[in-house]
Image 1: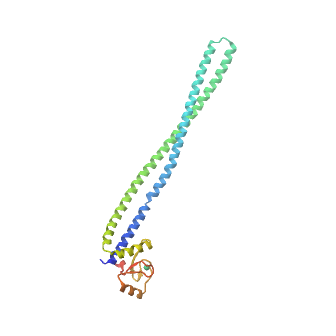
Image 2: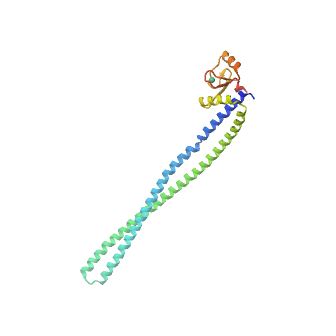
Length: 239
Ligand SMILES: [Zn+2]
């Protein structure tokens, strides 16, 4: 294989490596994972909010139960006083007090019931939130697995190309490689072109008969007078 052909195969290998790197960066799972993570943050915040609401409700239930119990203890004590009293007026006043205490105890029971209902609703929301979190988590793991598989496939392909590249480089002179590397950095990854009929494959500009004859006489590996890429004087497209 001539040095020119090796150079073109090297160019092809480098271009494939570039394409694989781009594919690796643009794997769709990456964007999907970013999306899932953002959703997870949102649901997590909701979960924390629900936990706070539940704790508050439970504390309120406890407070109301204590209050109701204390009121009933008070009622019992007043009833005791009534039992021991023979003063009609005192009994009437104590009965009035019991009435007030009973009303407050009833109110505490009623509030308690309402909060217990609220607590049940919060519990249902909490379950929904937990389900959503576990669905997102499962999806996250699936995507991670897919991403790893895709990465592995692309990296295997890259390794094969890299091995081929290493072989090709052995057959190309250091000077030519340096020229090629310079052209690659200057021309966004494509430093070596070839002839497509009488066109440069790099810039697609047609070369005149005179230019072609002159370049052919100089060397198999010339330089395109227009884009200044290395121009291998072979019709590589028709190999
Ligand atoms: Zn050109």
